[in-house]
Length: 549
Image (cartoon, rainbow, N blue to C red; front, side, top):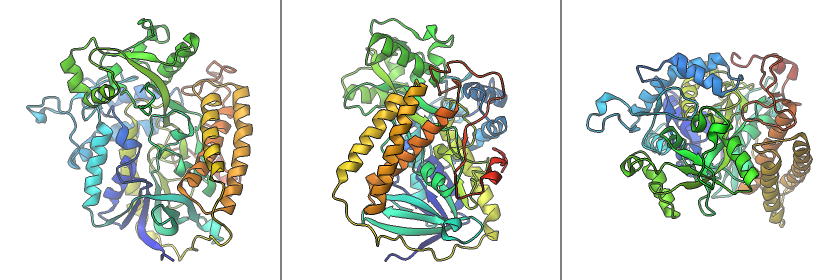
């Protein structure tokens, strides 16, 4: 039996949020960093557009705040938004210090500052980027720094199963003590214990049949936090990126929003434009509007896709601004410089998640959540482009400060019980997992996608209840494996999305329902908060404020 693996801090997740936290904390505390795949893999790696920050003399924090709040359709916490946008320049400078090579304004004189591009929802050029592969530049630079840090122990190909809390162990006042982690290589479950546990596990877009995200986006942190007793908020707001490459072998490759920011046009199969009919900002409207417009036109025409066209720009411009997208399209026989490219919407970002304050503190002492897995109320009902990597870094920094300030007062956790496999056997029915996996993602796409109805949601709820029952029965009888753990998490996240969507009786931001197509303007917009039925005093939770816990 592997002995308990101890550290001051356990970081679960190796995207921009998890890596930033590990690096910022390692100067003071010992860190175990757990990655479910190789250290590079995760949604951050595939982020293309950039990071929004005010550097333009004609721009302002107030403008960045107003754009974010407008895109968020009345559900953003303005205090959180202001904090984030004001910290954005410092976040960019820190990333630069870590070796991230952002595209300069002038290649011959990088001292002149960053090149800034513009994306949907932004009123100014404020998106700092590294060509069209910003996430890759950030991820590779931070990974390189982590590899060199002797105070960070990295565990790759390790998948978290569940959090270990004092309430589960009957120790009285609740606190997170660690987690059970599945070692994929050795097919064993280890106990990781820490004074502080950070969930930086990303979003849950793999719950849908079509997604721009990698296979790792299975909502693990959200599901674990829910089972442990945390509030979950705004799960009905699932962002569908409007433009992913349409090709059977492309894997929903994301066509960066910066293409539209630099003049790209959306066209119907007959070559006519259509976005002006849906929003005066046309191609530069926020993602929810653009995705819904594309979905509407595809269904109206019975078409499998629309086109994205930037071929009217000079070839040199496209080769300079979008080298990676150009190369990927050429792999599939499309030349971005010469022709329109077929595109479709795909699930892209989870705007809801584990409810936290601005220090990333959750409802359970000792447990923090950062990045896409968290709901800080920065994004509201719709995330504005290039605010996601920004959120990862800014709130990782604030969490760092909170953890360091409280570390001296926290005792190390006790010896924790080992994972119990005494009552389970090897499965001879793996088809159950694969079948349920496919069914879940398909009915979520059909019934809980870009456009919803009460009947569709009711159908989805009946199916997810049955699936969860089957999955829990299977989970209780057989040894765990990667697919089973992820399926269990996805089914719970699907249920949270459906519950949240059924509660919101209006159309707002990313949640659009044909039964309530109008915005409810009769009262103040409120987030959807799902309080767990057990594990924590729900009376106490219901009275906790959102941004100041």
